Length: 125
Image (cartoon, rainbow, N blue to C red; front, top):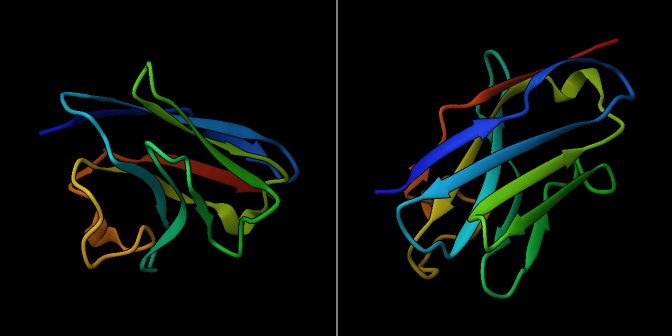
């Protein structure tokens, strides 16, 4: 079991930036991702990175504004969010996988076996 500690959410204005962090402990990771869930909506994929190769994927809605990165030595994944919009308001969850890829892609929540507690990001207009 991997323990995850998320931090970095908050209330900002449109156009501002925030950085989310997710520190993992317990096991070696194969991939990490960020998802978000707005009130009354389903959980959506945001970004993901593989731990060894550093392959990165983004949702179309955040391309060019969000950057995912990892620090292998600290077992930590980050999500740098810039040019935030009110529609980015959601609870953001970090997720990690400790196994190699199977039938699920990095964009699927089923790819991951541990989830963070979530951190609220609110963007006011």
